[in-house]
Image (tube, rainbow, N blue to C red; front, side, top):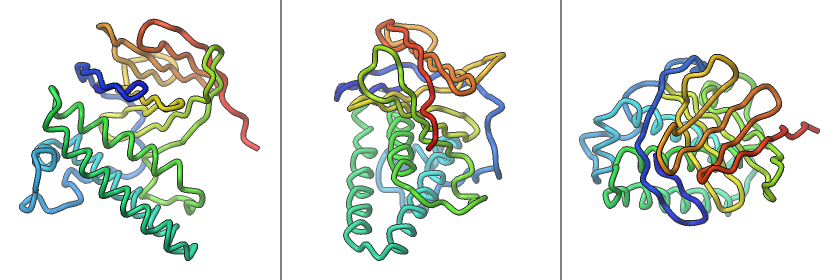
Length: 219
């Protein structure tokens, strides 16, 4: 999976493990747009891959919730900003044709955008099905990490976690674990692991630095 660390992108093999964390209603395998009108290699890839199609539907749902919230507040500027940022995101996703691994790049772009939109939502109705499979953001304080670590768990058929600290982003697929929720790139120079257990987590960063993290207490 692609890792973006302080603005640089590293190609990493995508390894996805089936896991038990998918919740809520099953997500349709059809994307949110008309595949007959796909306009880029990224959209064509989404139409041909169920996992990417599920991410597209998840993003579409979260984006609509964000638009609804902005509209309900009467903040027209926020609504227009959301729309402009979404158009910019589409252009960024479509630039994945330049990547060595098209699917990994697209997956990463969807996960980061879902994370960013979910972080902006402040008032999601109870039992809102459109948000059932996106949990977070959850905050962690990690010894040795100056910025707060934010985690959003995306529970499609191929679950993953999106991590953000400062200007850094990391998307990890779920990995096999007998205890807690573990997400990892298992091997290679960019190996990394995020292992959540209750209100704490361990974070083995790319490059080998290991951190112990405590979850932020809700006010």
